[in-house]
Image (cartoon, rainbow, N blue to C red; front, side):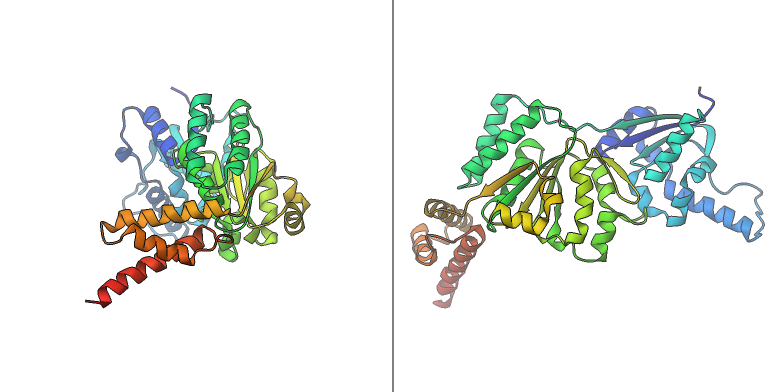
Length: 383
């Protein structure tokens, strides 16, 4: 047995942590693990009483020392900021000198302390990181791309352009993140494309943020980091389940947040004020409603623009595309109505109000829904 503490750092999703933990603890179950936040509270209560000169009638430490300590990533949000400032010392107080300590996604300050202790040979230290690989056979890749093309109607060229880059990423070990910008009018398939890619290639696992909502102090805390007991982009990137990142409506993001993405797009490590995440190999999709590249350069600025690897333009819907999407939407309502609606009645009403140009998925959905409601209301009002 080692004569010093042994630290194992597990970096990755909760599922990755749980699977590795079962192997590491072997004979014990998760229910037998100590409640770390409660241990910290007991520890602090004991030392506060000493400071206040409150006598310890039981003549013993009220907190439990252990030879196996497991700290989950969710534990960081359950303890106060002052405990984070001295977390390494608290861990040592709560464990025996030969204890095994397993930590999920530690804060940057704790990780740096442990690395320094390892260099001084005062502890044993191992870091195990989750790997996110996009490896797939050509035949399966083609099947998945065809499935995406069939779901995102009218954007065959855009899907093909994305597919070329995705295939490249399966063949080369990309070090820095690969950044796509999908641009064009609203509601013509950009968001739908990313969600289909998540479904086909990443088991529906995607780190997704809607940047139009990032306009307040809370967003600032999230992007730049704040106290360890607050969630942040670094914290969430550490526990991501895949290497797919979706940043929707990038054109709506206030420009004072751009500096965060300079770092994210251009490095293998991303740090906010509290956490550091390995972001090598990320596949990042941005969407925007810019109509052309010149408009994009003007509004985003060159530092962001030149950090984007692939620009994919989404064409406005053609007459044929509008027809196909409208028909599909009508058929969906017919199937869901269980006989309450007739195709011919709904189709004639919808086609009379649908333009041959200028429609998008949202306007088509609204037209169809309005006519469904009109038909149903007309029927009930006659009774």
